[in-house]
Amino acid sequence: MAKIERTIEINAPVEKVFAYIAEPMSMLEYLPEMMEVKDVDLNEEGVGSRYRWSYKLAGIRFEGESVVTEFVPNRRRVSKTKRGIVSTWAWNFEASDSGTKLSLTVEYAIPVPVLGKLGEAFMLRQQEAMADLVMANIKARMER
Image (cartoon, rainbow, N blue to C red):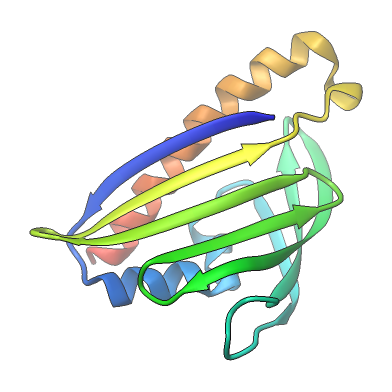
């Protein structure tokens, strides 16, 4: 499994940032390669909420489903994906002097049979850059 970690300071309240990340449709705004989010089924507890998605990676369309496995309001949200690109997205939220310290850890299985060994290194670099862009996009939206 590949692992990417990012942290950013956002000049916005934790509650605002958490609400934005907790809404699956927001991914269409901050995750440039996300093509579609559908069949969103949220519940009050957060854990067990699910949604389906389509994502373009290295020009290849992947479809999958994500399920929220941890949900602590304004502190932590973790989702795991099935099918397509198997991954875990763990978001941590912490109040800071500037508003919110947002941390993201993404672990995912690189679909090597699809991309081949040469494509694996390229994809890892591409996903590192994508993580930087995701954090910058969230910061820009929250600080508007």
